[in-house]
Image (tube, rainbow, N blue to C red; front, side, top):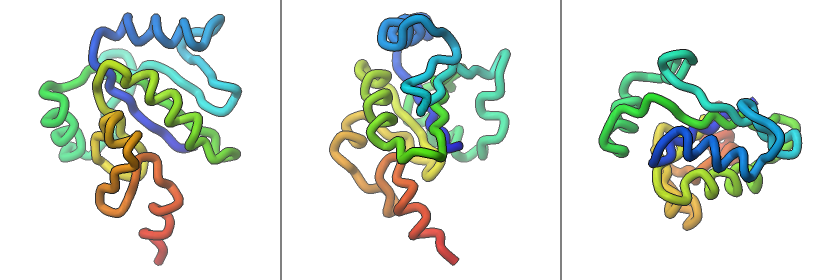
Length: 137
């Protein structure tokens, strides 16, 4: 299972309402065609940042200007590519700003960077193929 964490701007309730509108008749977790599994994670009742490198959290804080206390966690089945689905959902969640972080880099990706295919340290957002190539032994 691969993961993406999305830190949208705005209130948590607004993000939940948006997920409810676009993925009706389900709630935390939401699913997208049985391919993406979506939930809200937080520090208070969940595990957000529990296994993150402190330097990665510091980069995120610097980018967003504060310490986020919640995020949308998207888990992607290993049975599928998932790139199109992840991009679609992240575009929805970052419509009004924020950043996303994937399993392959600690770079906080803006929607503009994702849509432009920006390369950071040899990787694009959710670029598992290039990551594998870069990390072959």
